[in-house]
Each structure stands twice: as structure tokens, then as C-alpha cells.
Amino acid sequence: MDQLTSEVATVIKDKKLWNKTEPVLVAVSTGVDSMVLLHLLKEIQPQGMLGVVHVNHNLRSVSDSEALFLKEYCEEKCLPFYQTKWQEPVSIGVEQAAREFRYHFFKETMNDYGYPVLVTAHHQDDQMETMLMKIIRTGSLDSAAGIRFTQPFQGVGRLVRPLLGVSKKRLLAYSQKYEIPYFEDETNQSLAMQRNRLRHQVIPQLKKENPRVGEHFQHLSEELLLAQELISEKQKVWYDSYVVEESNQLSVNISDYQKLSEAGQYFFIQKIAQVVLENYQLVISKKQQKEVHELLEKGVAQWSIDLGKDWQFEKEYTQLYFRKRRDSLPEVVMPLFLNQPKYLSEHEWIGLFSVGKEEIPEKVKLWSEYRQSLTVHFPEKVWLRRRKAGDRIKLTEKMTKKVSRLFIDRKLSHEKREKAWILEDGQGQILGVLPHAFSYLSIAKETDRIHYVLLYKYQE
Image (cartoon, rainbow, N blue to C red; front, side, top):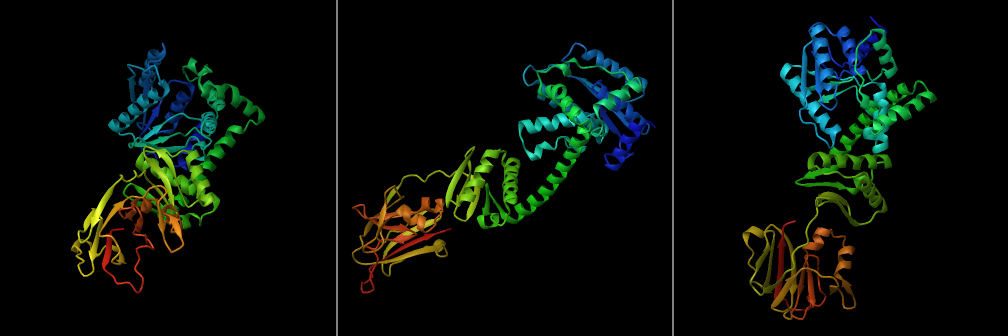
């Protein structure tokens, strides 16, 4: 057995890429890489356990002749051959569209003919090109690892690349040694595409610096994949421990976040971004993730970051939330009459009663309660509204405070601030902020006789 054949067979066995009982479908384009792969697998695979799949992309004048050549080659070698032709190639986004068309046919073929393994000819130089492209485009750890030896494919099997440890130079030498026929795609020489520029202008220079640079890139790829696996394990533990999932909302206690190291905090937020992408189809950019880190580091009590599609990160004192942006409550002013209680909403009820005439509906009896005793001087008709800029409340004989400052001092969340009710008299004087504070002007003294009771019942 040839040395390269033996090495590839060993990789397949040691990395458990597939076993001898599994039929394998090899994707062949008629280029030197895939033709060498086909030759190698024909030597390695048992009789009847290898099929060939080809997509005629119909993008070059020689596409039809290449497809015919491969069909006749497979007939001569007694190999099952599956092919299709892209009848209507697009003119914009050709590379992505061709990939989607190709992979769809691969999936159909695997599913229809029972192939659990698809093999492609990606090699060591492809790995270098891919890693460089990913670094240039994203600079992200999760993409810099490049191509994997094996990964799930389209829900029908596995995509496997057994040549990742083999250089292009060795593949060319093997093709010459065994006189393997192949076609050269002239578009591979065009410098219009980034991959070709890296292939012809950058990688040769790297190889001049160190002929073993391809091996080093592959080792780096494998180490990065192992590092990602370790990080993913830690991220899952942190997420399961610290994140509370509710309907259209994720929340984290800031004290749990602060337990993590700086590196842990970084990858924890990254995990939340991954979950958001998977569950809500929303991309949280690296810039937005960094902004979250910086704001949490500064310790600002309350803030929010718009993420798009009405989603946002929002911090409220001890909690960090991912949720939909909440619209401000509508402007409303309503009267409240003595002994005429009312529901303010499905979860709020209020009543101003003469002492001894309190009538509380059964539905609200177990709700949270704010109660205030009042003197005869309290007006029998008051108004309820939402807060406005500049609202002030008298808390003691000598101290008046802005309502906004009151909220800050009591560390109330944005949601609670928005839901608070301002109680005022006919002259616009604030009598209370429900359910948080009452004006000094309306609170009964110990010697005062109680004539009225204000009851505000609500569900948290």
C-alpha cells in the first residue's frame, strides 16, 4: 500500500471517521484534489462501499465534458455514480447559491441511497486558507479553528474530510505518480476572489518562512477546537446555573455574574448571545457584547442597550435582562371618589373608603396591599395619573423631593417606576406615589382622628 494511502487509512481509523460497515459517498469535482481522494478511497474502501456524487454547476464551457468524463471513469471502475446539473445558475451571489444547490443534492443522494457519510477533498492548504479568511473577516475564536475532520451534515449523516493533514504538494505528487487524470479549473487562478489571493500570494510566502507551516496551522486548528469544547462545557454550566428563562425573557442576577473571572464573564455573555441567536434569531454583535461588559464593569444602577427588532439588554440594579423593549404606559388621568373603588387594570384595584365601609372583592384579598389612614381633611375626590418630569412630593415638614429621586433612592426598577401611580388633589398637589410613598401633608398624626382609608391592592 502506498504511504499516503496508508496514512489516510490510519487517520480514518484513529479518528473514527467511519467504519468498514458504512457505505461512503465521495464528492468529486474532477479537480486534482477530489480525483486523488477518489483514487485513495477506492484503495481503502471494501468493494461495493463507495459511491461518487458530482454536481455540474454549468458555469464553465467545459462543465459538461467534465461531467461526462467522470461518468465514464466511474463506469470503468464499477462505481455507483450520481450527478445533477444546475440548469439556471444565478448571476449574483454565485458562490453561496452554488454551495446551497450542491449541498441540497448531496443531502438528497445520501438520503435516497443510504449513504451515512459524505467525504470531501479539503486538505491542509485549504485549512490554511480557511483559517486566514476567518481571521481576516471576523477575528473570532469560534470561527478561527477552520475546518473540522468531521461534523453533522444536513440531518442525514456526517461530512468528513480525511485529507486535512495532507498538503497540496503531496496530492499533486500522488496524482503524477499514479497518472491520475483530472481537470484544472481556470477560475482558481483568478485573483478576484479572496481565497485565490491567499492561495497564490500569501500562503507561498508563509511556506518560505517555514515549510511546515501547514502542519502548524492544522495543529492550531485542533487545539482551538479542543479549547472551544472546554469553553462550551463551562458556558453550559454557567448558563444552567445563572440564567433564568421565562417567556420571551432571560434574566441573570448580577452577583452571580460577578463571581466569574474576567474571562468567564466574557464567555458567559457570549453564551447568552449564542442562545439568543438560536432561540430568537437575533444577532448580538461583538460590539454590543463588549458594551454589556463595560457597563456591568462600571456598576451603573440602570441602563439599557437596544439590540434591534425591539429587543434589548436592560440592567435594573441587581438584575440583567434580555427582553423586548417595553412601551411607556399611556397617559391617563382618572378620578377616584369616596366609597367607589375600581380596578385600575387586571392586576390592580384601589379604593378610598370612609372608616368601617371598606369592601374588598374576594379576588384581590390575597394580593399585595398598600394601606394609608387619612384624616377628615383628606379630599373626598382625588385624581390618579402616571408620573411626569418635575413631579415633587413633600415627605417631611421641611423636605420636598423629586419623585424621580425618590425612585432612585429606593432602587426601584424601570418597570416599577413606570407602573407607579401619582395621587393628587384638585390643585395638582401630590398626595402620594402608590405603592411607594405618601405625602407628609396627608399622613395622619397620632392625635388625629381617622376618617378615611386608602387601599391599593396589586399583584407583583
